[in-house]
Image (tube, rainbow, N blue to C red; front, side, top):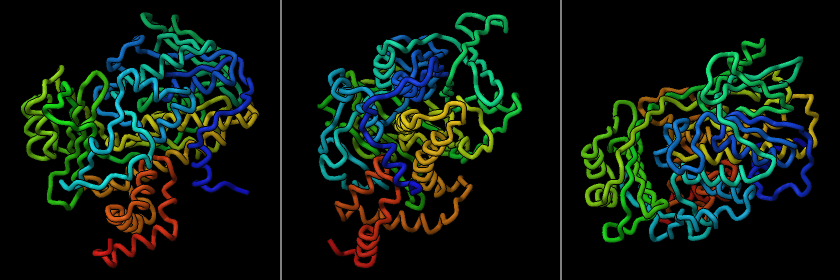
Length: 469
């Protein structure tokens, strides 16, 4: 029987590790030590004699933002689905992260505001324990745990291309750190190559230059601008652990979003964001003004009275994008693409790192199926497309409501938007709907879970009888 998208997603988000992984590969090369690259390397270590990671940043064990992740100083979220996968592939990861300083704020220290109104959170414990930290802290832990595995090795250099012989990838090329010129490029024979080089991936160009089809790229121009600043955490100023604030189109409020996270090192990481011509600056007074005028009280309290650590950092993301590798009629065997190299989304929704962990689980499912490695990894790309579809649907449905975003609109957009608004309104009054809604938005469940008859009927009941409690 053919798996539905929801069934595939449930399998991908499972947390059981393969009982007896089989070694299929002599050498695998992973291009990029991003979250996606590190997670791919972890999975490959079960199936390869040797895994080589090529990474241009020489960060070592640093927990500072690295050049290859210019948004690393900004607020990042690890959704519950991603946390579950980290514990799956690195047993005890959450406990270790919390012991090292990551936080897990209790419900009374966590708030979500929509259009200035406090929203009820899901019942305590319904989504599991939260894991809050900065992106560099989390990535450094994943990097350390990955490189502790005996058959994984990292070299510093810039990915330079792949070699294709016949119908399969046979090698990866890289320029070692500190060298220049084509004569210094190193070619590493490989049975499997993973492109995890991020949004700026050049794989499509490499395929085109070798005479292979290039994937269609879809873009949605979100024009997101945001700024983040670190403050010393002080209970005399606020007890807040997590605060998320969002103003929606049509609310009469500026289309600004913000977040406060209590992160490692007894610090708050505070974010303010706007769209299109609304651009936060690196000026601390502009940052404080925004916190005072457009966000809940805790934003102003921290920005006004908190001790600023370092500088305000800004970032701009022009678009969300996805590359349809799954739809290529021809693609070389021995090639895997993961993380932002496949798709990257509006970062406000925190899907990036979680998607990367789920791509690794797609890779595990593929390699655990005892595949014919002389053939393209079709089942892998099909699974990844299911993950991408979920994240893309959740983020772009909200982005399409922004006045400066003019498509592309998916089929059935108006009906989907109406249904989503109906469900969202009902979540404020129905705990079961609230839990299911949050399980979908945190990528624990497929969106079709909200289309179950019992949830549709309950949402309609609240819409038709708004006074019902």
